[in-house]
Image (cartoon, rainbow, N blue to C red; front, side, top):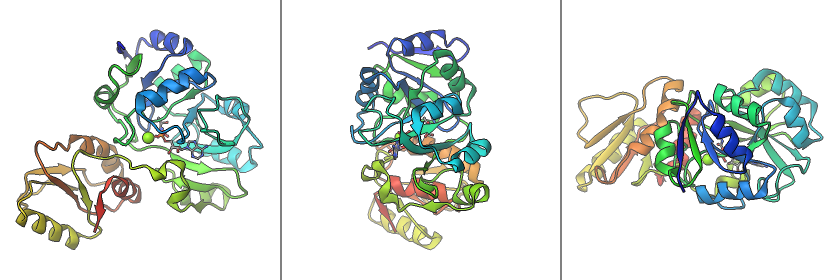
Length: 318
Ligand code: TXA
Ligand code: MG
């Protein structure tokens, strides 16, 4: 398949392709998404094929506004209204009872649907101009890190989608917080920048689900080309670097800042503050090449969400 690269100032072609049941990747504020008409089963099936995504992992759906969310969902609890007032548009996906409007393959035959209103001008433009709800998971091959730059999307999906809209780098760099809103109290299924404390501040209560409850959690995520070892403490980090070095491995390290007194083949710096580390993480995971290193060892980071994603990518945690 020919994949057109479309400039974000001329998205008419992307609009037409989506309306014609084709698949188009485009930027959102979190990560790039791969979108198709959520009401068209054939169009949605193309997303699963392009990503190599298991069919039992449901897709979240992007909509332009709350009205469209109420169309796709039923029995929406009143606390969701409060959450939307504060956090939407933004990096939060609400899991709600499905009203049965979207194609069955979107929700993997679940009775619930994940809906998000993105906060990105290109994504919102596409949603408004197509007039569609778009099933739009992250635009990576299944198992690979989510794409935070157009080059990542091109690497994974060139030849597999009809078009890719180039909208530069994404702002947040990590996927949305996924919140199950089917119960009396919201429950976080996937952590993100909107935290359990943020939600409690708005609606009083919020639970954190054991990670096993997420349909996607039985699959490995964000995997780099070589094994990744995540250290929980600075001491463990130093220790494992020394051991792997002594065993003759070519070593890459993921650390906050580059420094000189470490004898390894590759240093991947994530930066210091939480926003910066989150933004850089997936780019770094993609920059790890097996031609250059045999193993990558990550130092611990203060950010919980960065640690959560690193743990998902890790072959081993020490
Ligand atoms: O920030 C984001 O959410 C990005 C952008 C593109 O919108 N999308 C994204 O999609 O990260 P994806 O498919 O990589 O992650 C969506 C997650 C999946 O882990 C999926 O299992 C979960 O949301 N999900 C979708 N529908 C669900 C449902 N009905 N119940 C529980 N989890 C659901
Ligand atoms: Mg994903």
